[in-house]
Image (cartoon, rainbow, N blue to C red; front, side):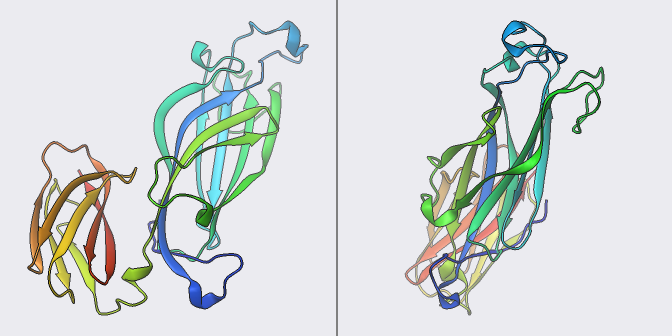
Length: 255
């Protein structure tokens, strides 16, 4: 997925109030109220094998498009009206993009094919083609909060539970044009340097995971600080450098 910097603009505010934000969207659960009935009466075929296929698309005001497809075949945990707990899938991860919302489309169907794909074909049931389901204004969500959990609903048939994490990075670009933070190396194995320039005095360096949780924090006076993350899982993390004038955030990849 393309990683960019992202700006947030409120619907009712002029362009001078744009703020810089980052956001991620994670899908945690899926549910279908659809039976693989081969065209039969749904109320009479509740025990039919369940083969739901889900597609979700997200986009923002800069047309950053992200999509993912889930295919389930004869999965008893994906049967009619049951929430299927999935391994969390990061649908989107964007930063420094001019937007004030995330928009979602969904599609879904019950597959009758032996080798189902992400697109419906002849004989499939409960077909709902791609369509808009919800637009979410980032300013209505709690910044950095894992409580931003909501449900996408496609025609009361296909559902997806998502978590949105977002951060306001305004201070890092508007009043702080002379401030910069670099990570070296990046990607890294959990051991890296944080090089900050243009900051006077003490600063706090935090390592945050994709859910906004602080997993490491140090205070520093110098422009160069060494960070050692022991035993962290591979993945994407954020480095936040906080000081009196604001906060600067950068993304790292740990392998």
